[in-house]
Image 1 (cartoon, rainbow, N blue to C red):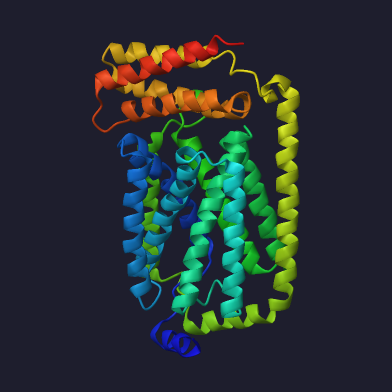
Image 2: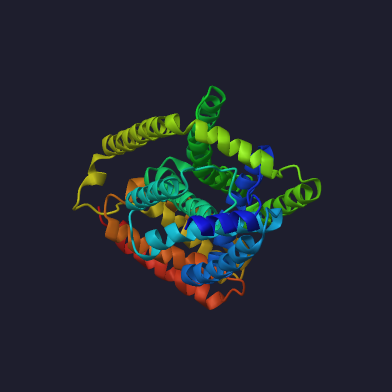
Length: 406
């Protein structure tokens, strides 16, 4: 094994960029456009979750092959891989939640454990968790595996806060931004840069999702109304321009001497790394788990009947009203307007998840599936008027039957 690592070391220069402001700007941009691009492929192009996952996974494999074959850090290959992992990591969580019905709480725990296991094996094999000196195949493999799990974990934790706990993406974004600020201040005061980097890396995922949600939502729903397509184009262009700038100026290039100097410093801090990481994870777990149960208690007190196993969803007239508006537009041949109006239904339904789903998960899933079908039809690249009207009529029938139960 040692000889293999030595051979890799002779063949490769450092494969990652310097962690600068440029790094975090592109990371947030990738996270935001990754979220909107996944929705565009899945919903707008009507590819479906499975097909979108397969296509993105295949593209990611190609990108990683290019990244691994490169002898040194190449901005285009590196950030293309991050961009595609941001989509694929989101889709992994979405497949578990929407396709297999796995609770976001379970996904958050599982991906957290997998990420921790990756770091444990990485540390045991390499005797370092350096984020600056990635110049062996083994280190590079651990690095990208950790990045994949950070995106999946960030997706699960962010959706858990925004949707299942009913905080919404704006409040979730504010909480996440505050946590990132606290970690940054701690790093400035001497907190080890390795756990600071990975904590921030995880949290920038829900932060990016919050930014994307704010930009793409309609003004009626508290957003700027740019829509997912325009948001994707804007952020993708910003990524391309920034990566092109870095490719030309090499402002984020780490020389071999710089990478080795970073690793030497990190090796000297190895003793405190474990305790600082353990302390930070403990604080985040206490705050996260404590906040989760506090929020559950708030929801329980706000609507006690919602936690009764025998109750139904109750009054769904608000959703029926939006559905009826959308159907009238579709019957009048105004499919573009219907597509815009159904966005209000998606937003309202997602915001009501924390209140409605605990009342009766089976009924909630029935309505959720019908809404997903409406979204797929109205957001299809080639809309079918009959299919749009049929999906809306089915949704209204389900809402009518369930909404009449008290």
